[in-house]
Length: 492
Image 1 (spheres, rainbow, N blue to C red):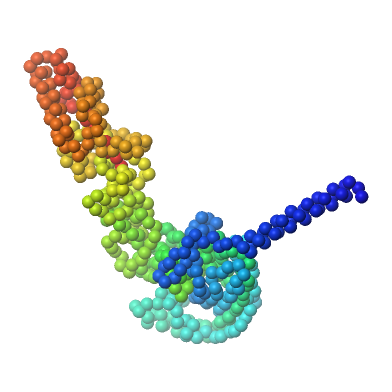
Image 2 (image 1 turned 90 degrees about the vertical axis):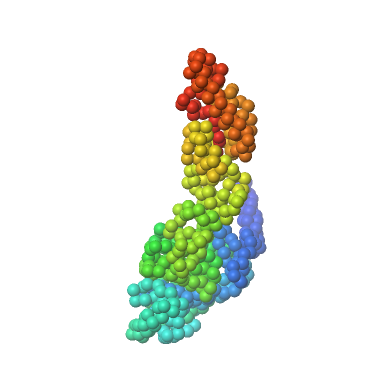
């Protein structure tokens, strides 16, 4: 045997060993990888597991139970109607069963499910188990899709209109020979579904027409005003979201899944148009609401900023105490949103605040404008006789000298600083040591001292000569009192 042959055998052996080690640890990881639950949270009476998807977004999955859902989509065929996934939350080794109902004028060619998980995708071919003609009980739903593909929630106010639409839909289904086909299948779970979890149902008829339903469990919905289109598959679980002041359409065949506790809201007077294959998949615990969206606002300052992006809904267009309409909100980055008290100045804290203040906002911070740092303003109170009383109220409209210091960090906020020119600084040195607004006696003494010096200087200038003026403070005390004679530092 040649050296070349021996070397080839050795290399082949090494490759076999490396592959064996890799396969062992891959299988071990696959079989025993724990679900990466962050925590268990409860909404209502339902427990949810929290996960983080590949994009770093937090999403929820009901801890137990099956997912039964109805599908609202445009009047095109084939068309998904309803389905069941049991259980929705699975672990490695579990058997997950699926059932889906599809409407079509004739038999379907193929119906299958694609389950996307953390390690790839599995395909499950579903089998036909029954077929039935459409009846009125099939349309006894909390919503209806009218002849113009508008999605309508069923309410007591539109009951008579809904009944007419249902009658028309049943007549149309009979005329077209629409049949409901029920398909079932199951698969054995062999990988975790904590980062990626999508269930996609696909139905194809004999003419090649396809309908697709994507249940994107691991992609939470997030809509931002004034967006008016749905442009991705997403899921609302135990949360409220939707769009304001707009009719809603789809940019493609995307599905919004309303899982347990998920509520999708749009305003009265506007509509949801199911087009381009767009759908809503609605769990028995999900809701469609024609109402108004709000953010919470604990401090009624009228600044239109909330400290949270969490939304709620109300049937009232507002105003509502402690809330801000989503369509009116300027942002959700209020950094100190709290109920105002005698010691809490939360109503003065919001992005864009332009005033500066001499006392902390209530939690020890001087960050009144929510920019994450301290900005300092220096105000001349001697040039502004009414400044002292204004300062108590937290106002500083009469600014003399203003500059910014991002490194101050609030250490000198609320202190007097005497940065007078020439002889002024030495004249005021005694009063420059820790003088606070609360020390009203010393403040009044200082004002009297300043007044007396200025008065004596004017007399000396008039009676004697200017050359004696330096004894009383020199040119610092002229009729145009120096801007930097007494500076008080405020922060925001």
